[in-house]
Each structure stands twice: as structure tokens, then as C-alpha cells.
Image 1 (cartoon, rainbow, N blue to C red):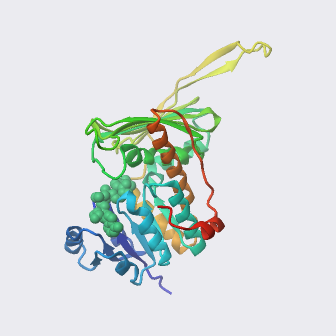
Image 2 (image 1 turned 90 degrees about the vertical axis):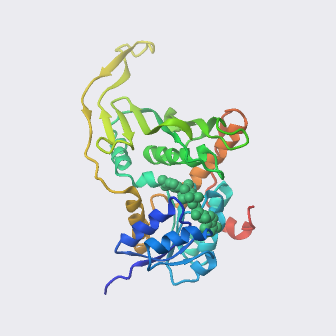
Image 3 (image 1 turned 60 degrees about the horizontal axis):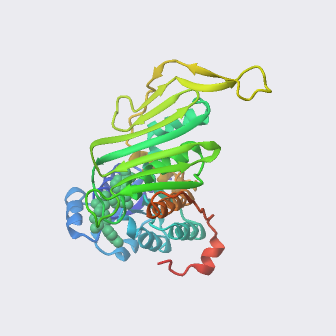
Length: 359
Ligand SMILES: NC(=O)c1ccc[n+]([C@@H]2O[C@H](COP(=O)([O-])OP(=O)(O)OC[C@H]3O[C@@H](n4cnc5c(N)ncnc54)[C@H](O)[C@@H]3O)[C@@H](O)[C@H]2O)c1
């Protein structure tokens, strides 16, 4: 029997959400039934570009359609409310990052999805980027040797958001990448930030340090006020250094087969006798498949729903990122003092008994 496409509502079609309408409309296993946005000017644009798609400004009208799943690409501060409504209406959900703006809310949504037997996936798009996936194979295959540290830079002139600061907006990408590549969660974070563009606004420049297991440090710098656009992530290991440059489609990933490590000298009783081992090798640019990451992300979500699989960026992993970002804000408020990150494992029973609104 021929399989019916998964029927979607897309909620929020601003700068980013319209990409979901375009991509899902192109996929054979998906059909965009309805688009919902509070802003009717956005809906006019949808009607013009996708005349077969219904539009509405009312979320409940969208959710009362014969749909299987919803993509939520509204502003971050509305994610909790909108995703909760979608799950309660029995729809699988793909929600944009950041999953919510509070860790307790992210946990509640994950518990609710689990109780309802629905898929909840977070749009941590870089996990579906072929370059990042390539680097993950290097890390998992121990090709980089012992990992010393990781750092990322995400700078540009805007686009400035008013509902979250630059760290929540931009560094949440890098945190999700670090967690994925290292297959680990940091124990503490230290963050400093400033408001260079407008004093009363949110932090537009930020620096954060994350402590991962095995002594691995992570550093992230983000800015909405830097005229030099950069999207770079580096991993330094004892055997090699890997650079991911999202702005270089020709050489998105470069592996420098150079490294340095210490090796103990023959006398094991003398701990201070070490020799420096330098390694020098080739610079390799692996072939990276040119596929739009958002397309991979949508295909993965559809596959998870149709075949009852756990999404790579599942609710719990999205909630971990929110716990890290919440601790980041606490550290910002204390001028960079390290803040221990408290991860709450999702507990369905706790949700049933305490699911009063967290706001
Ligand atoms: N993965 C990525 O690379 C990426 C890139 C950009 C944005 N994003 C994320 O996508 C989300 C949206 O960002 P954006 O840049 O498109 O913002 P945007 O402000 O351009 O669009 C948000 C849209 O949501 C609508 N909206 C808000 N609340 C709503 C509600 N309750 N019901 C219906 N519509 C509602 C607004 O009218 C607006 O049209 C954010 O979470 C952002 O972090 C992700």
C-alpha cells in the first residue's frame, strides 16, 4: 500500500519558519497542510508562494486540522506555550532552538511528549550538518587522539533579537555541537557579556567557558556587533586539529594532522621527566556531501515519526542545552563566576503530579 505523507502544520513563519514550509513542501513524505502566524502579513507571503497551503492566525484552528505533526518556529519565549498546545492536541513536534527559555519548561515538554507517546525533536540544525557529522566520526574513531579543548566563534552584525540575548540565540548552537561531538555534558559554565549596542537591551556580546569531562574545556565567543562574520569551530587534540568553517563551502572541514603530546621518559620514578612529542603531517579537506542541513533535519524527523525512532536531538538533549543556558545567565549576572549546571532527568510521574504551569 502506498504510504501517505506526514501532514504538517508550521507555526511561526518569520525569517526562519518559511524555510520549513519550502523544504517540507518539496519532500515526498511530507505535506504542509496549514501555516499559522500571528502576523497576517507573513501569511500573505505564504499564500503568494504556496497557494495550496491553508493559513490562519489562530493556533487552535491549525491544530484542529487533520495533521500528524507541527513545526514550531515562533520566537523562543513562546515555544513552551505553543509546543505544549501541540502535544496536548496529540501532534508530534519539531521545535526550533532554543527549546524553551527555562529548563523546567523544557523538562515538562519532554515528559509530556513521553506520556503522550509523541516525538519531540529540537531543531539543533548543526547535528544534521554533514561537516559536523564528519567531525563526529573523527572524534568517535579517536582519530584526533586525546581531545584537549574545543572553541567556537559565531560573530556578525546582528540579526539582533529582543526576546533572548546573543548567547541564547547563537551559543546554544555551539553548546549543542560540543555536547554532540564530545558525547558529554559540561559540569559548570562561566560567562561574561556586554551590551555594546544599547544599554537597556540584552547582552549582544558574550564569552563563555564550559568544563566538560576528562578536563576538556570549551570556549564560545558570540557577537551581534562584529562586522566580521565568522562561523567557526575548532577541536584541538593530541594527534590532530580539526576546523569547521560553515562559511567555506569548498573546505568546510579541514584536518591538520599535527599535534603535540608529552610522553614519560624511561625512568617511571621521576614524574618530571617528560619529553615533548611533536607530530607533523598533512592537511586534509575531506569531501563533504552538499546537502542542506535543514533538509536532513526534516528527513530525520519524518523518519523518527514514521518508524518510531528516537530523534538525535530529542527533548532531553534539548533540555540539557537549556539547563546550560540557564546556568550561563546566572553566571552572566555574577560577572563570570562559575555556575554548576543542574541537569534534571525527565520524570513523567513528577510531571503528572506537578504539572501546574511553571510560569
Ligand atoms: N536553526 C537555525 O539556524 C535558526 C535560524 C534562525 C532562527 N532560528 C530559530 O527559529 C525561531 C524563529 O526565529 P525567526 O528568526 O524566524 O524569528 P521571526 O521573529 O522572524 O519569526 C517568528 C514568527 O513567529 C510568529 N509568532 C510568534 N509567536 C507566535 C504564536 N504564538 N503563534 C503564531 N505565530 C507566532 C511571529 O509573528 C513571527 O512571524 C527562533 O527560535 C530562532 O532561534 C533558528
